[in-house]
Structures are given as C-alpha cells and as structure tokens.
Image: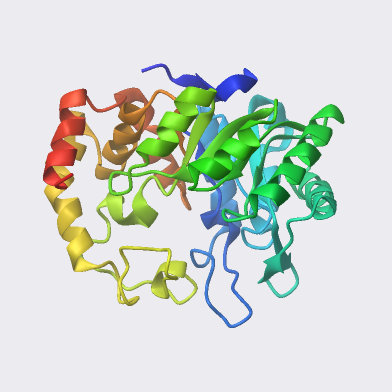
Length: 328
C-alpha cells in the first residue's frame, strides 16, 4: 500500500492514516451535564503520543475547535511546535462553547462566525493557516452551507485556509460543498459495521478524499471492551447519545455488538494485525481515497494505530468474508 495519499483534488499529500484528536481534548459537556469527551486526559502523554506518531510517519491530524472546548487544538499546537510545517492540520467549526466552563453552547452557521472561529482556531493552534477547514454541522441547511462554502473560498484567497470540507454523512450535502473549487474532502463515518457506499461513490465521482471518523466504532473494534469494563463518568460512551450505537444503556459495550466483533476476529487479526489494525485495514481496502482518523490517548495507542500502515489493506476476499459474517 502507498503510505501516503493525495487529499482529493487539492494536491495536498497526507499519510494514509490520520490521527483524530477528539479524545485528547479531555472532559467537556452539554449544559445539562451530558459528557461530550472521552474522560480525563494527561496532556503530557497526549503530546508524547502526537510526537511519536510524527516519528512513525503520521502527517495528518484532525481536531475541532469544540473538542474539549478549545483544549484539543491547544494540545495539538503545543505538540507540533516547530514541526508544524511537516504536517497537515484539519480542524472544524460551527459549534459554540464556553472554554471557561468547558460547556457546549449551541451552533452558529453564519459566515461571520466562520471567520471568528477560524481566527480563534489559528491562535489556539499557534499557526497562520489551517490546511483543511471543515464545517462541523452535519445537518446544516444546504443553502446556508453554500454561503459558508463561499466564505471558505475567501479564506483560501486570503491564505488562511488551504482547502475545506464538510463533516456530514449525507452525500447530497457533501456535493453542495464540492461545488467549491477548493473543497477537497468529506469527513464521514466509516467502519466495519457502518459502510458508506454512496459517500465513497461520491468521493470517486468528484475527486474528493474520504476522511473517516469513528473508524474503530468508538473503540468497539479494538477488542478491548470484551470484558465490558466500566466506563468513567466523563466518557461520552457512559451516557451515549442517540447517534452513538454499540454502548446500550451506558453499562459498557452492548453484548450483541461484542458478539459481532468476536465473529470478525479471525479476519481482522490476519497477517499479525491487532483487531484495531484489522479495522483500519478494512477501510483502506474499501477505497484508495480513504484516510481513517482513529482517536488516541496514549503513546501505546499511537504506536498500535501507526503500526497498521505497514500491514496494508485487507484483500478483496477478506472484504467479502466480512460482508458474509455480518450478513450483508
């Protein structure tokens, strides 16, 4: 497998594996106390993990202004330091938050807010430009999104942004952004359990990169939830919102989902892979446009995820085996 990929029609080169920086943002919540983070974090360990990923060839890091209400961006900026120009940094905007109380506080789909958010992200990241600026409102009105696309084109002209994208699971919405010359990707959910054939077809047709969030199904595909360990109170999976499948009533992973993980184990662990590495290999096998962005909170997780690159994608036969096992 080619260890680097071109990010859609931008010509920007990235590692075939990116790192998602949601988890390193730490704890934050909705106004009524619903956790939105992954629990407590050790910022020094996060910095070490990012730098280890760099040493292992990872050059694409995806964050958002809302992750940890700004904290994820600050940690990423600190970790990259003088190596900023060696990497491609993606962030997102559209959600409002209070950094002081670490609370999510609504949404704003106006072009004026997009500029305010970009300015704030640049300051937190300690950089003069964002490589990939992504709309974080998955269900935004398409007409409003067209105005935001035009704003992004202005940011490109000003040199503040190199390319932009929409984080959405709706191909029709992604196509609205793709009408812009410097739209180069769509970020969408993709994992062994959650295929996205229509979105992958759109990426192929419109020369977009497919940036894949939740590639490990919020940790289910790592195999580490088989004993149904308790989840800490600040972890979003302890009180899962409606859009987060696989964690049932919050008492740990759903046994039915764990049974599916177990059924897939032999295929995913082929070639000496860990289950997580096999899950990433499935994504690479689905399309040469995919760039999965698994989360991490430790050096060990960074090393395991980065180790998937050398093992490459699953074979076409193994892809068929996965479909057969899952009954699709």
